[in-house]
Length: 204
Image (cartoon, rainbow, N blue to C red; front, side, top):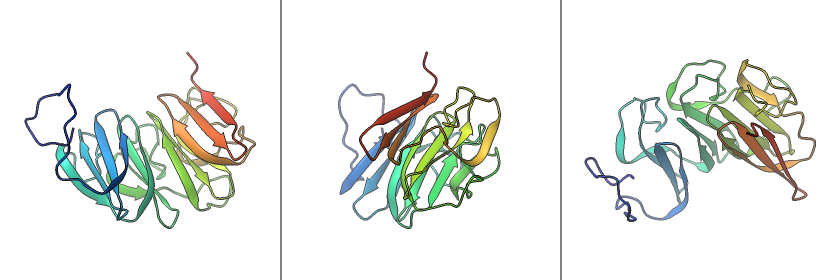
């Protein structure tokens, strides 16, 4: 909850006293982040996989500064991603499914820039969404790229596979320009510029 060590779970809202001027907040499974008006990202919570982004794997009980110049961000089960003001995307935390997009399956405890896609030139990122073990980004020209686990087709390639995609691949099954994307546990939904929603992946 970001209110200090030793605080019990609370059924009542607790204000985080060390944060103000916040314009956005996201929660992962057991960690959270907030974006302030100055475009600085602060995070806290369970950090066993480095998902808070402090450079280590020590739990963080109060908000800690993680990344400056942030435009958008998203949190998953135990990883996090953020888009900077230059349209570049950075991820950190668990990477067992390749969901950090850095070409490896090694966990990272600090923000790490996502590699260029294998299916086309990288462009300015305008939106990011993450699931449990995958991540996706919409770019300025409307293309959608995803990376990580794809065992139920959550990367939008039009086919499912047990392979881990450790850098972005084109979500080729989404044929409309995408302006927003959101990830669930094992599925993804994308919003098109025309206001249509496309979803793919697990459907249990």
